[in-house]
Image: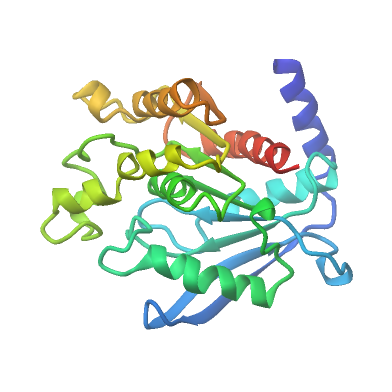
Length: 281
């Protein structure tokens, strides 16, 4: 395992001077939100000269993030593509603040599918097929990437969730799920239950489409005194057990040394991306 990682890292380092891809910031009008919405898009090197559609990964940020939150991964994409570890891909990183990406105080989930995806697919040569779409998220975005994959399996071929803010029951008092207004002001536990992933599991498991899901979390990720109920690594293990062991839904789980930060997310994003691309071949 260590040797394989060393080979990958050496390949990436040797391509740091490769021609980088480009990013653009796009503002468009969302009819669902009834306002302008912003996303950043990463285009691989050579995009302007190719005449092909690219697989796409939609990147959902954590609480309080914006379209710049995923900037640390774009140099990784440059290096992985240059080293031919992955094929060229496009990445779309929208902004949603503390929305939890749900139809809460603003209908972000509806807007994502009704407005954002069509806008990106119309402006850029992005795959509009399920087989070319992936979704990833960290923290709050991990919660939402999971929900999107389970609630809309016809839309995504694979998913990656990093340090996902998963709470199979109620969120802890400190969570922005309670304080942001995404689930009502004051917090409405029934809204949380309606939008939380267990609410869509039964329907997901009753249909035939399966979304391979890569789950990664740090062993030092927010060790809450309540233990199992709130600790993200334990909740990640619970999810993996439900998906992979009980239902036969393809999933991979990695509990690794680390906390709730990019030091963990960057290498695990690489692993998740490779897993997703292998799944859609």
